[in-house]
Length: 257
Image (cartoon, one colour):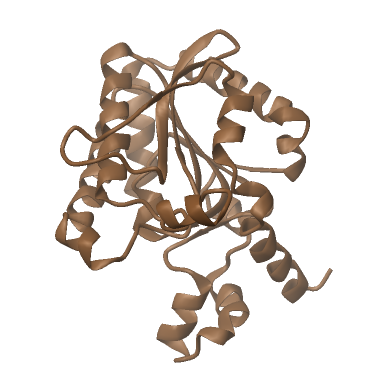
């Protein structure tokens, strides 16, 4: 397959509507998922799903972005772009997980944080920075799995984890290819050219140690049974690390960026 076709396949796969029902994925992984609502400041943002659950009998906290499954839910979630209320909710659940000594799993499929004026007025930039800072200091293990899109600071504020995995048809970018093309070429239609320059290929990101694993799309098949087993194995691996080792590895991981 040519590089252009591969990039087109990755972009199409990352944005596939087959990946938009994140609540269904959460419940496949964690049938006993207990959802938590609200940021304890202003409101509840449906673009963030967050709560407590178990995976193979192991208690965890789960945080996922939500693009919605129909027009109404897509509008309500800003097509998967969380507001400050969503990031505050995510941080609240992370802090709860830390208090309960639970590993945290984040599942990401978002083009980025909601860019509207109301979000900026509510402190979007501030909460993104706070989430990043707080995640780097949490005393529990964090695992991020990029299911589809993972754009800009809106994804990074949920992905400063000890291990980051991607599906083979997913993207982890500082800006969308369309945004890059608009800035660099003054033409958003040149998104595929931009994607080539940006190296959106998961294999490239793994080669450069930005992510640890690239997973085949089949891990989502059969009620995500294979993905569930991979997560359970990673949780066991985390158990082998002392808190000092965990934080030292996290510091080394992010120092190079």
